[in-house]
Image 1 (cartoon, rainbow, N blue to C red):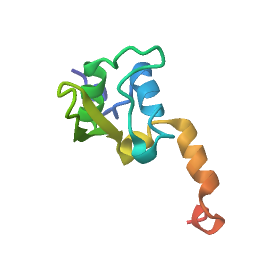
Image 2: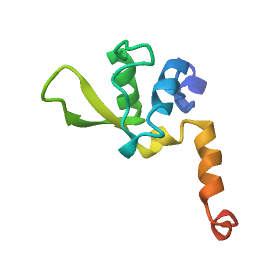
Image 3: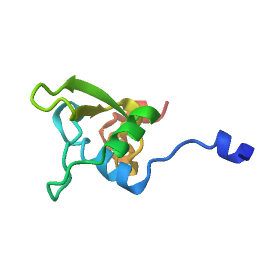
Image 4: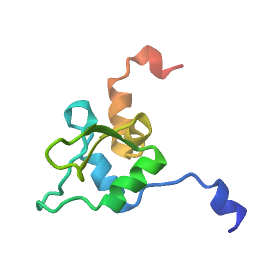
Length: 98
């Protein structure tokens, strides 16, 4: 593997980015278990996001033990470009100049 690949910062895939984006407007950053069409989110997507630190397990689901309920981490919130602009808009002017 080249050094470029080793030193490159990981970036979410389009599928991962869509899943992470859906947690932005949820209470506590809860990430959905299902997509917009009612299909379960691929566990590989969930696991890859956990491994990169963009999501973290939130709690064990007592009803369905194989479903992993996750929430966004601070690193996961920064993976969406619109969020950076949104946070900048909420930030008081005196903080922007720092």
